[in-house]
Image 1 (tube, helix red, strand yellow):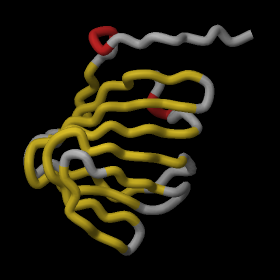
Image 2 (image 1 turned 90 degrees about the vertical axis):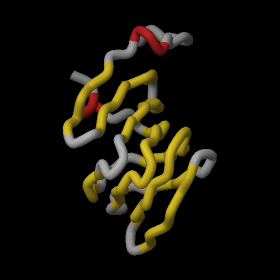
Image 3 (image 1 turned 135 degrees about the vertical axis):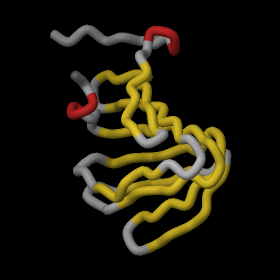
Image 4 (image 1 turned 60 degrees about the vertical axis):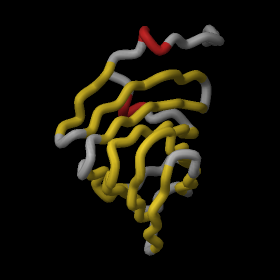
Length: 112
């Protein structure tokens, strides 16, 4: 039986440097949901990619140009993006920023 965890503390999460001005912290995961914080320096790029997971992204800070499929838009703090499974997406950070990503199912490739 899997033990359910109900509380996740920010200071318990480890920051992972991804290179080129991008870092992430896996904040929480359980069952089918995962929450990840991604930090971008100005001009950092989130390379175009796709994955089989559904993803919601909340722009906590900063300003980004996001490309999802064939559509490109500028997003700012407070905006939310949805990425359906297998759609190509990526971004360019225009002003230093922070994103909160929520995935279902969890990104097992993020867990080491």
